[in-house]
Amino acid sequence: MFLRQIPGQSATAGRRLLPLVALTLFATASVAAPVRGSLSRPLVLASDEPKPEPDTIVFALMSGKCPTLKVAGRDFECRAVGFFQTEEGRANFTIALNDPTDASHIVTFSGNHGVRSQDNLYELPIDEMQFKSSDRPKLDGLPVPLIEGSTGNCKLIGSLASQQVSSISCSATNKNGKYELQFESDGTPMVLRRIRRTRAGGPPVMTPFD
Image (cartoon, rainbow, N blue to C red):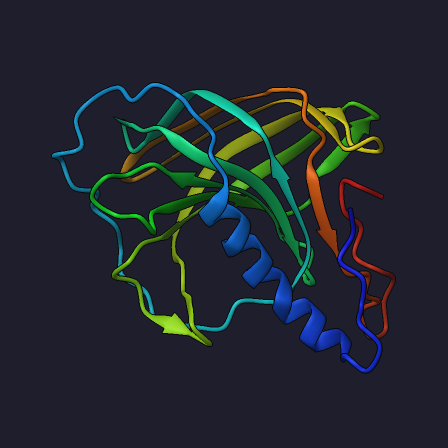
């Protein structure tokens, strides 16, 4: 399923719509997993200055469960798992947490230079963890992520051409601890929203779906 540009609508308007589509899907999706551990210990995160995010050109929402979801050593339940990529090429695996203390709690494994080495395998080196919450500053009505430099890797197993994902596994570390995701699909085809765009002076941004 693709997001097509509406006649008379600019490409920029279409790309601006994708984050809203993502937030809507995340707000309504339900991905169940058991909650383990305590929610009492707060995360210690570095501060940063709000700055605009690059436009999103592709967003995919997966349906399934998260047997493992750890955020700086704390166990959480996931409400939704998605993938999105910006016009600059940065790719992101994003998880909406079922956090009883914050309905806007979202974490993202983010990196560049993802590789689809096989038709059923996509790997993304992770160099950032991104965090959104209800107390984050907002630009254009959307929360600005807090970014922490991190080291790790994500693997997506499945046939992206047929929009079927079997599993996603991510692991990353930074000064605040370790972050882990194990996602298992329930077999439902992913929901895909996409806008194609050619960068000025360069080739189109390649995504795992190309």
